[in-house]
Each structure stands twice: as structure tokens, then as C-alpha cells.
Length: 231
Image (cartoon, rainbow, N blue to C red; front, top):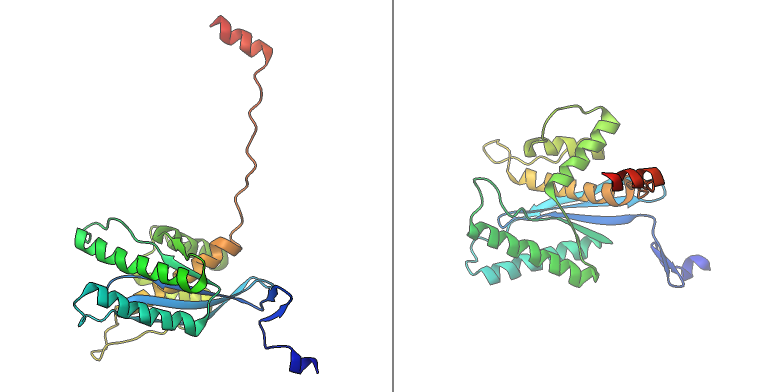
């Protein structure tokens, strides 16, 4: 009888929603390609599970920027509706990129980034978490150093991320190739989104919280005060 009464998981007891896992949706946003990745986090075991990833490209045939934003918004809404995440994370914009930044580029990138952020707020009734790209790559490095002995010096290159994030999730990276056999650049938008989702879980639920205890300064002694006054 109970099996007929209880809805499928996740289910409710009163106002408490019980989750077997928490679903995270990560976005890497640009005006030419938007990568997304879905990850399930299991609080009981503190494990992450890769679910899916992909990318979409804003329609270049739509010349009006507002119509292009609306078309992209509709496509992103379909992704969010399909995967039903509890939390969404987005790689934040970089205000200046050496050799790549122009006012036009930054304005367009900001338009797409914030449009997706507002859409997430509308659908989930909570603001997505914005993550800095350097913090994202730092989390990938820290995790690999502690779990696999990764010891390469220097900054992690964008081209390294697909294999590194695949190693973290224990999967084969879903590489895509052009008809010529060369790798599609969209692979890196997909891997960036996977890193965003990983970093969100790592930072919020797995990374040890920094100690809030501050060393208390010792009150100056009477002798120290007298010495200070004498000087």
C-alpha cells in the first residue's frame, strides 16, 4: 500500500525534501559557444558523478543581438528544464584578456553571461554561483595533487583540462572531431563547464573550511606600556 502512496524519489516528509543526490549544472559562457555540464553530488558518500555535458552555439544568422539573446535563452531554458538542477554555477566573466579584449567583445560576453544568470534566477528562484576562472583551475590542481600525485609546475593550460577533468570523474572525455579529423574547439567549452561544476562542489561541499579562529594579540604588559611612554 505504501508503494502506491509514496511518489518516486526525491520524496517528501512534510516540508522536508529528501534527496539521494544533489544535481549541479555548470556553464561556461561565451558569445560564440556555451558549454554545459551536469554533475550529481552524493552528500552521504561525498562523491561526485558525471552525468552529461555538451555545448550550444548562439545562432550567428540572427544579426539582432536582442533576438539572438532570446534564441539562446530559450535553448538554455530547455537544458535547465531537462536536467532539473538544484544548483547552477557559471564561470564569471574576465574583464580584461590580454590581446583579446575589446569593448565590443566584453559587452557582448557580459550580455550572454548575465542573461543566463538571470534566467537561472528566474527558473530556480535562487541566483547562480559565479566562479572565477583562476579559482576553478586551482581547485582542479589541488584535487589532482592530493588524489593522483599531479605535480606539473605552472599554470594549467586550457588544452590540458579535458583529460584532467575526465580523470577526476573517471570517464573517457567525449572528444568531438571535425570532418578533417582535427579536434573541435567546442571540446574545450565542454571541459570548462565540467570544471565549473566540479569546482562548485569542491569549494562548497568538499574543501575544508579555513579556520576562523584568529590568534588573539596579547595585551601589552605594564612594563611594555611604561617603556613605550618613556620613548
